[in-house]
Image 1 (spheres, rainbow, N blue to C red):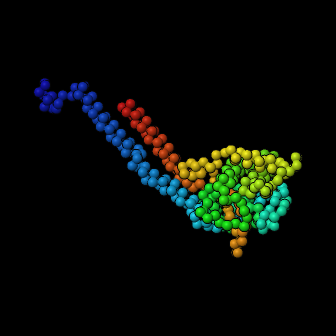
Image 2: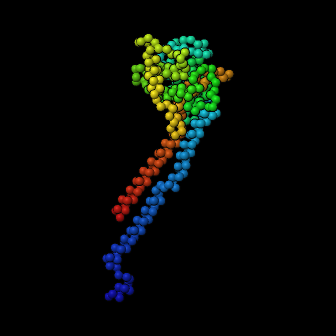
Image 3: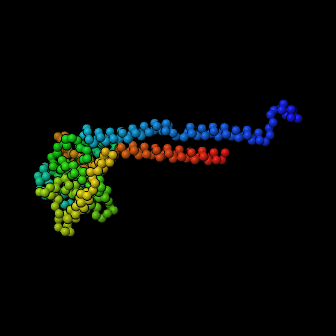
Length: 316
């Protein structure tokens, strides 16, 4: 009987049969694991995406440098000052003017501008933004051209202007950038009953920081209970906070606070026009965000696939 079974084939007892199933199962499991890891993201497979994210990051930095610091391109700008129909806030106060306005006190709105680009605009810059006046020598116009200049990183030679803000002082430039960056959203709060005072106070804080000297005060205080006094008090609150803030701190080689001086000119003769302050575009942050999102998604996907592999191994 043994010889007969041997002629028909090798014995197929229970232990032998189970061993063959185990071998087959191990081969199938190894094949599946190999396929899973082939599909799982690896450093090599993610490298092209990493290069793309780095390209976006560097392109953002280069774009920002070209727009703000180097070529000084001109852009058409249209703006509205303190128009309540546009949701802007302002208060009428007494301000001492300079230069082309003849010099002397005038009654004028002080507050927000809505700045929008009627023509081409810098890359990555918003279509419109809330700006403030940096110029006591010119009234606002309905439209003009403007050159964007970084307050923290101005050109080696700061372009001449028909007015005299304290651009020669890095402290003044940094403080104005800090005041604008820190309080522009606080001032533009239509849910607050004091929004007009907040906005006018921010405007006065910018003027006082750029122009005030021992012998010149562009916006003097007023009597208690008057709008002039309330606006001046709000301005001093901004200025006092700026005086103690770390506005000149650098982060990764860049100053933490910066803003754009939109140096105005009026075509076709390029006469000096209203100068404004606005936000700095941050295209580099887009590249960083894309890179961070890529890393999070890849890490999550890899972790999920490893968990599925561990579960399948445990069930086998």
